[in-house]
Length: 110
Image 1 (tube, helix red, strand yellow):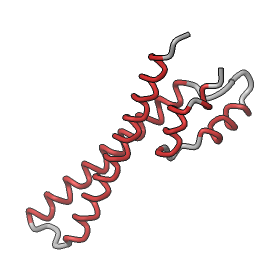
Image 2 (cartoon, rainbow, N blue to C red; image 1 turned 90 degrees about the horizontal axis):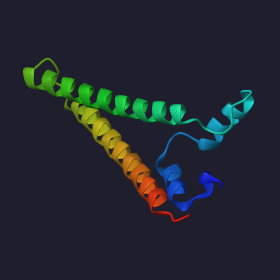
Image 3 (cartoon, helix red, strand yellow; image 1 turned 45 degrees about the horizontal axis):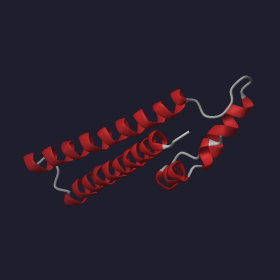
Image 4 (cartoon, one colour; image 1 turned 90 degrees about the vertical axis):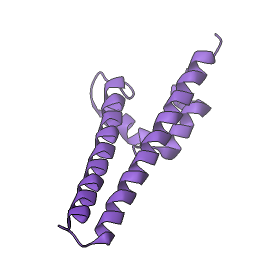
């Protein structure tokens, strides 16, 4: 059974910035490794969460700088807040797609 051809998981490709074909090609070059390992997928997800947290922390730092008068640039503040917001929305979209795919797999009857 080819897991990548399932419709629920194909939805993840539309929101993911990590290309599955590249990961498969990299793993194909390694001897004894077939397909994408769960470890690499989990590491990618954790990196996405860490990146989102970093953007959120940067936005909070910009808010503090602007509030204390250390920075007069409203432009930098708004950019940092928008980056944090978009990153959070992206992370939530990926999480929702993964949960939906998991539920679809669990509801399959064999």
